Length: 303
Image (cartoon, rainbow, N blue to C red; front, side):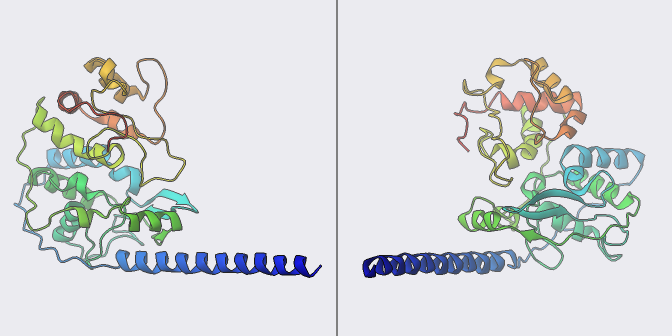
């Protein structure tokens, strides 16, 4: 009986030690990730050239907002929307971008808009969590001007901001470098707007493809999406590699898939793939296809 008691004591001691280690590790992750999230960035926003705000500019700004992910995170009315609500990843909601209750303050300036969109930095200097500013960092001055003009024109929505709550897995991924703050990825001192001209060109396609890198990776070879919940499927390979689908598609197949959210074989794209890309113009879609054809063929997951 004494041996049984000794074994039981050892087992209990090991369990308690394991619990203590787990609690300490969790505390370290929470403390270090909180420190990361509170980090401040000094960004000097260069005054953007003033462009006339007319009906065409507002329409272009709305098109950009609806096809570059703004409505996916902030809602069709820009009053804020759920992005992720998962115990592992946290409660992540796009904030209210309107002037209604719970939205932006009355003194929010064009420089504040540009700092957030182009640099991924809040007005108080914090890096914005999951704000994909690397997608928008090289926006042309015209596109940035039109987008800001549209966002400033939307009707006020009264909706309280849902506080950011970063879950344990997201915090761990942040410390491991799997989830990156755009504010860390962007070279704020040398950042300059693109001077690309819209057209069915590889250059314009590359400009547009920046909006694809968040899920498909910097190489666009797809694979696991670190910024999403664990149950998100891997992103498709957009390079012309045999392990991906695009190597077997035509430009018409690609355009139809974006328009209908169905592949040429009739299968439906996973809901994680934003449906707003269906609103890309023919020029944008064809330019994007032209650029994807120039990518080096990489095996799926070679992010």
